[in-house]
Every structure is written in structure tokens, then in C-alpha cells.
Image (cartoon, rainbow, N blue to C red; front, side):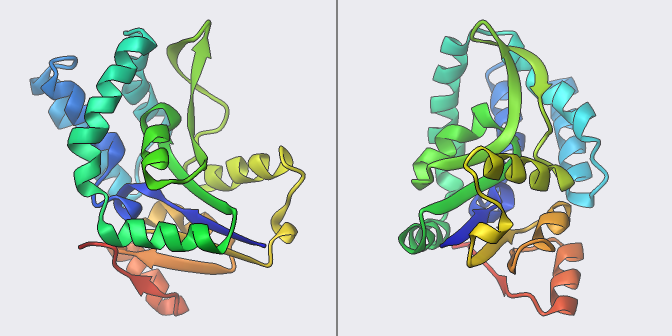
Length: 221
């Protein structure tokens, strides 16, 4: 059997779900535009340049989850997916995911973005398995903190191997492992799999992919 992994932001999506969620909250007035629009863009630029402090970012990004009941957050999330995410789910990305689902039962989206924001996006792609950064919950409500290891950089490998352990799997369980990503931040996992594939890559990943003769593809319509 094969294992096929997809990054989400700027890979399957022609945009970034974390950035779009923060912008959505700003537009709803949940966060002040003057302060948070600049801060959101700064974090996004740090992510793209490979300088993001993931814990500083998560302190910022998860805070709104602790300020509202999940019933309200889920209503907002449904509207966010419909208005900001579905328009950036390209036909090529949907076709690639559907092809992977026909090939193997083990198709995962693995993303640094938190599970609450991304679980309905994975469902929209028809993907059953999702590894995202886990927001801490107590008594059914979010605390604004992280539970466990964020699935970012080397943390994606840690979280994937935890997912293996829960299913009595390991890397040797698969005849082939493949990972699609756009980002230099995913080089640890790209270097771990059998078939790394660069998707609309940033400049650093593109240079790395060309040097190693990895396939480079585009999923943009």
C-alpha cells in the first residue's frame, strides 16, 4: 500500500487558510483591523521566508478560539469555508486528490494550520485523514493553547509518526510514500519520503527541487 501526503496552504489551496481565517475574523470585527491586519501579514511573510516562530504565531492565532463558544466558532467556520476557502480550491487540486484517493486508502492532509480551521476543508476535499496543529480543549471549549507538538517543520514528521503508532504502522508499512508541498518549511518531510513533489514552490524550495531533480508541478487553474 502507498501513503500520499498533501500540504494544504498554497499547495492544495491557492492561498493560505491561516491567513484567510485571520482576515475573516478581522472583517467580522472580531479583531481590530488597524492592529491585526498588519500583524497577520507579518506572520504570513515570516512563514514564507522560513523565519516564523511557530509558538509566537500560535499564541496569536489560537487566542480567538478561546474567546467564543464552539457553537459560534463553527458557524463562523462554515461561512469562512464557503466564502474564503472554496474559491481557492482549484479544479486541478481536486483532481489530484481524487486520483490519490483512487490509488490508496492512506491519503492525508498534513498542515501547520490548526485542526479546527482545517478539518472541514479536508472534508471538502474528500480526505478522511488530517494532521493539523491541535488546539487544546477543556470541557469542550478551546483554551487558546496548543496540545502536543505543532505540525510544523520537523514537527510534521513527529506528528505523522505518532499517527503511525496509533495504527500500528511505520514508514516500512508502505511500498511508496509521496508528499506534495509548496514550502521550504516542509523540507524535513520532503526529504523523508520516497517521492517529494514541489507544488507551485517558493523560491528556496524550487531551487532545492531543481538541484535534487524532484518533480515540480502547478495546481493553479
